[in-house]
Image 1 (cartoon, rainbow, N blue to C red):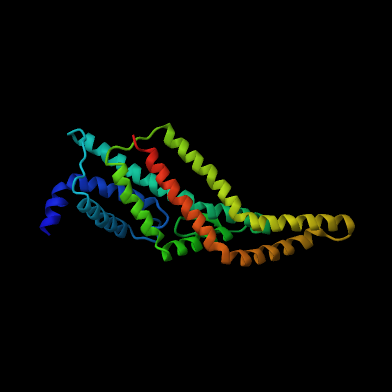
Image 2: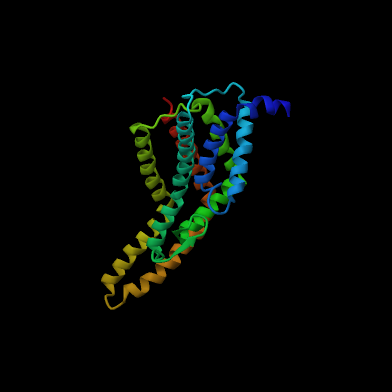
Length: 261
């Protein structure tokens, strides 16, 4: 208790800045944020992790203008840093929403969407399935622990108040968004390829037997083939998760380094 009093609570100004960065992350990340986690739980967990960070880094210091405005600006800066990290995790995991949207467009589910009560947005059916599968694998494999470790690492390379927000950081986000589109197409490519082959077969069949209604025949065939491909791809989902999780941590460290002055 004496250790905590001397190293944590007597440095309440630094504790608040550490707390704000974690709070910004937990409020925006899809794993810890959303309506599934109570607000008091986010605040309490952020405070607990902040005390651990400050107690394990006793030499952590911060410089700012000795005015209320200077400290408030520093708090907003740290909140923005945490929100950027959480938003990055969110946009990386939206790979599966986008892949599901591409799959649904091919198999005929594009007009059907469900309301995600956690994020309060309309999401595709297949994308919602992929998203919750990857969240389950992430929690089972302790991926959320690695994300918190990445936040701990951020204090070593990006001390409090040292983050910079410039056009280079925006360029990093643009590169990440372009990579997200590429990865989502790769995730959906097996089913898209199978449906494309079926479209070619239906086109040849329409030329050889024009009296057949390919629109009536094609819709159920695409649905059956798409669902069959989903069943076949499911055992390979662990490989997909490993690839996406590797990209997630690489991009997270990429953004952290992008804010180093």
